[in-house]
Length: 117
Length: 114
Image (cartoon, rainbow over all chains, first blue to last red; front, side, top):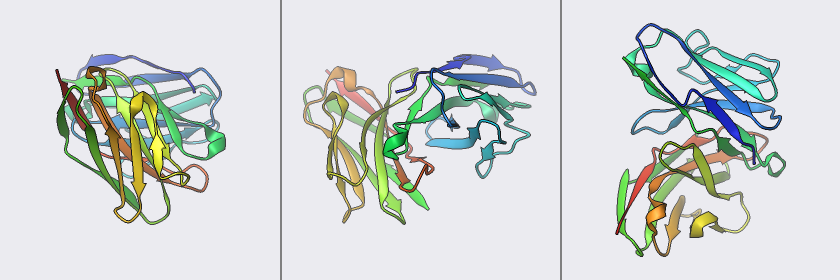
């Protein structure tokens, strides 16, 4: 399965600033997904990023707050803009693996733990 | 619409005892079901998946899960817990027909007591 590298692994940020999280995959993939994992809550899909097109955002997430880039088939970035303490969370990058089986299996990066003060 | 409910946010078992983590799903179409495990400071790893083949699915590390349509359940079991099983476990659901969104449960933290 794919190997995903995320950075930063963790960061402490000041309110009102923005942070960009990078996700690098060791193979070419069509779709990349960004999830948020808040303490005590389920993983929530933020958006799906396809190379060469605008990201598709889930309900409750907007491009101005979470701009995403997908410049090629192995890389994506997620920016958390104008951060507030409510954005403190783990952000996870994932890709679909075992595509031929059609089973929607996901592989995840280790996550980026953000703390906003 | 699809959803999963995991009963029990924390489960404690003694080393060597049976592990049972409960998951119930809701889906308007035949589901795909998954269990993922997350060790501290790591991403989620797939434990096992159900994709409409055998209802009893075996995964890694001795875990298995049984799909019961009548009960809309997909509980995760392991006959004998090991200390290394301590982690957080997530049940997830999606559906067939190309890539479909995967919906995760809230997770169950498994503690293994020596």
